[in-house]
Length: 119
Image (tube, rainbow, N blue to C red; front, side):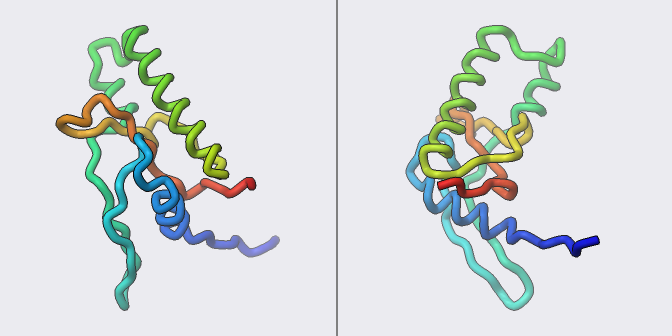
């Protein structure tokens, strides 16, 4: 049995967010760094993820029009990520969240730990 290789998950998040800076639908990263004890990344605060929003709905699902709007934005985020040369291998509702306040109509893509370069 081969030993598991640990991938630097935070490093991937920082790399992707740095490259996607100023792209609609990707949180702004303010600073990333390390201390003696840990590594950190400070990014824009976003609201609840799509799964939490769906489960909060009366019938535990989105209306057809909401589902279409969500699909358009999530597919746009994936296309922008692909155009930047990345492949996200962890596409799920928990990795997309809505913005807060004036940005509540924007869906943000999160968690790039399983993202890989393909170009």
